[in-house]
Image (cartoon, rainbow, N blue to C red; front, top):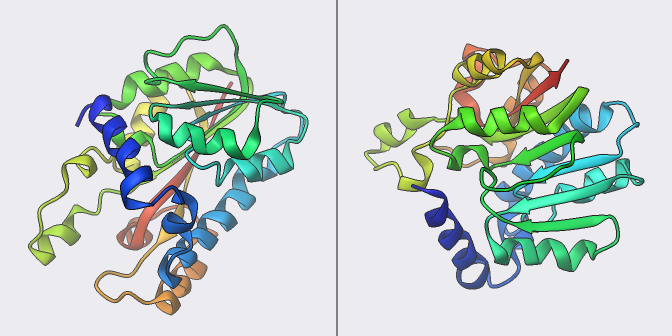
Length: 243
């Protein structure tokens, strides 16, 4: 699916599916969603918010309702934020939360977006999987990131075997997810260093249990991804540095 298709879907999701309350319906409407939110919260605190405080300019791709932007703002309160989102409806949600002071908003396909600025921190959650080709995206991030600064990407783990077991077709918009080992190769090729992968959201297949999901997350979240933890990882976070 191309970027215009993703744009149409998310513009429609905000209005139709989530009734203009995206954040609640995406992360808090059920106990399972709340568990996923708490996992994301913890993993961002452990990794993204532990980097050096000298952060002046932050670039976030796909902020949506600003769920994770709030955490970045609280930690790096003196920083300026540039928020890029292809969906007008999603970007409007962020504008309602943050206003104009220290925040700039750009409705654009990331690959078409132009800026003269460079950044001390790049962050993106659940966006990379919507780009058919990952190399141009990662190359652009490299060009926009200042030296000795970090980027963080949270993205879906392609657990396509689950669809096959259940006899379901993989939705079109979820067919472009990338395996951690393939993403690592691209990051290395582009020139990033200090690359680390961790689970961000973990779920046990078939059984929709908050208890089991939390149990496996507590077992594996402190360690980098491995063969076993990847089986239960719905989404992962990758940390990388530009020398």
